[in-house]
Each structure stands twice: as C-alpha cells, then as structure tokens.
Length: 270
Image 1 (tube, rainbow, N blue to C red):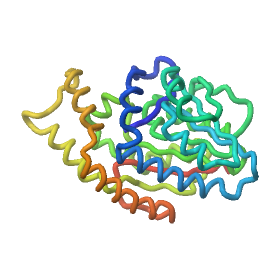
Image 2: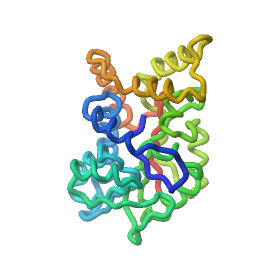
Image 3: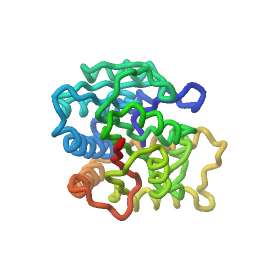
Image 4: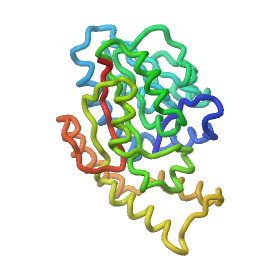
C-alpha cells in the first residue's frame, strides 16, 4: 500500500483520484497507522541530536498523511513536503502547516540541502529508481540521512501492485545494492511488516489459483480487489495494529527482522 507518489511526468499512469480513497482510510487502517508510528520513532532518533533549524524533506508527500507526523516529530526543524500532483497537495494543506511544493521527483526545485529526506513507498513507482537515489544523495548535507520504505518480494506481485502503478517490488539485496551504488552508506536495512506477511502471501496465492486468477487485462476486477485491501475489518484491524506496534519496538532498537512484506532503510551521505 502506498500513500503518495511524486512522479516524473509520463512515468506512471497513476490516477490522482486515488487520493480520495486514501484520505478516507489513512487515519484508521492498521497499515498506515503502523507505518506512521515506525517512521516517527526513527525520525526522532535521526534528528534528536541535530542543531535547531535542521531541514527535513518528504518527497512524494501525497495527502500529507506522513508529513503531519514529521511536522509533529521535528518541532525544532523546518519540514517541507513535495508532491507532483496538485490534488495531493490540496489535501495535504488541510493536514499540515509546513511548506508544500509542487515538484517533479526527477528535477526537484531546491538549492538548499537537507539533513533528512523521507521517501515512503514512492521509489517502487519510478522507472529510473537508481537515478532518483543519486539525485536525493545530492540533496543531502554530509552525513545527512535518507529514510525510505518500499514493498518487498517480487514473488508477492499482484493485482494490488498493478492497481497502484508499481514498477517493481524489491529484494533486500537489490535495494541494498541500489542504495550503495547511489553513493550512500547504509546505517540500517531490514524487512518489516512481518506480521502481515503470511496474510499477504496467502491472499496472493489464493487469487492466483486456478479459477480465481485475475487476468492482467481485467481492469475492473483489479480495481475491485485492490479496493478490498483498504476495507477496515474492526477486530482484525486492531489485532494487526497491535502486532505491528510490537514489531516497531524491534525497529526502534535497529534489529534485523528476518522477513516482511516491506523493506525499510536508513542510509547516510558519507
């Protein structure tokens, strides 16, 4: 699942109308709540020893779902959100007070550098992900940090990835190599969202089984199945939120989780 996109024009057929669906569920859905909590914890660790006035950029801030947590966490810093789609920025403005910029991730309009850049479930949408990482490397101050999340395991590719306009899902070593080739030093890299991995795997297998498979050209069924991912089932939603909160404790201690439906990385510009 993704909350935001900041694409170069023409790189993806992403539908800005998708933002409406996200706004309706982001505050309640376990996946978004858990990811926001994890990001807040790690951002607090990264920024706690920085001098006041440090600069934080979220690339692909979408509806402002994560950006509002960055704003709350980085009270001594300057937070900026950039988003390609005007529809996302309109919704973000209702959630945050920080600076918002409409911009293309392939040519970000900043002359200043940042102490922290966040890229949360955006990289998988972009065709030239290695060039994007190099661009972000140039926007960081020395020892500046890049915090990013991406979906894991190409074997989990499904109707949801097609509906979300993903270009790929990542293997751990693939993401590691791309980060290193962009000039970063990796501080922390781990799978996460381990609690939902069995559910995701089973559902993907069920919907690819004979008689239930989704044909690539069946746009209506792809959209309907993807929309089902956002349905909030109260008891299950609460249980998964609880389990992922326990997982966040391991992430806060920088432990390597053995598997997960997503990957998380903290990388530094040396």
